[in-house]
Length: 144
Image (tube, rainbow, N blue to C red; front, side, top):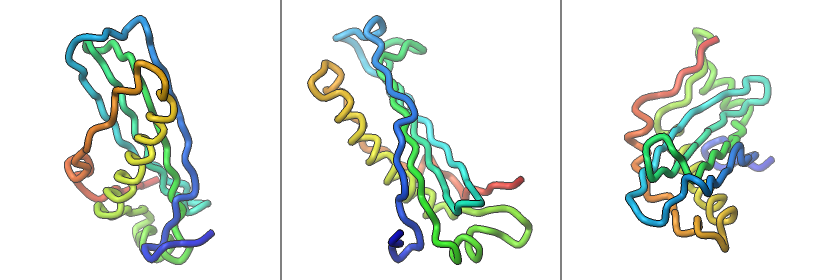
């Protein structure tokens, strides 16, 4: 695996869930976009995962389009041991790196959304630009 200068590589991308709910879809009306962001860690494989989930709704709690994508970022072994693993046994993903992972994951989700909806009425729904700095407010710390 080739790593970039930051010591990680995008090693996997998975569509965790995708659904269109025709009975909840209405052509007219305001669309509400609910966004969720989460992180995970696999300490044995030196992998940080970033999950992004988007739900498009016309009425609250009645989604008509759902997409969840998981991106896997393999951290170079020495960087994982020396930078991610902390002396107190916790694992740290600095806010700046977490934001970067989230931006890459959201970008990938845009592509998945387009590919899955191409040629359907749902293709007009795009993921807008998202201020990821507001979604990731601090460093991500994993403790076991």
